[in-house]
Image 1: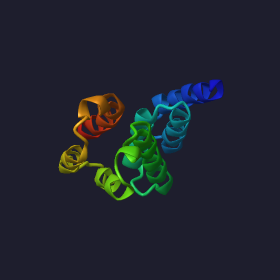
Image 2: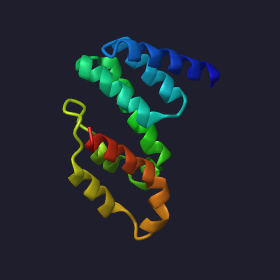
Image 3: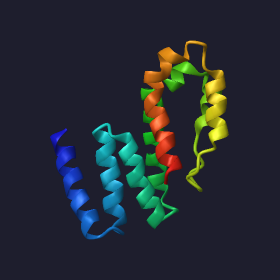
Length: 132
């Protein structure tokens, strides 16, 4: 973990010096993912994609960070696989369709209040994506 924190600090310094340094943003995202800071990693990959919208690596890593967040929220255990596709974001526009979120909530069991703590990180992702 210490090496990822050191790397994160180095890439943070690099992006402070040159906010358009695409590779530093990408590597910062990788370090954040390795530290379990997936929401922050998504933001770093978004910076990469703002600089270079066609960066396939950043798209893939951003998708992976979203997947890790969803898994940590037990989303994949709550819904069958075909229903988890409802929450996928459109990476070309980086906008989430909140109707999809409503659909997810309509699929939740009656014991929603017991699931809220597991779903809270997932909701934080949607809030962050909506405020970009």
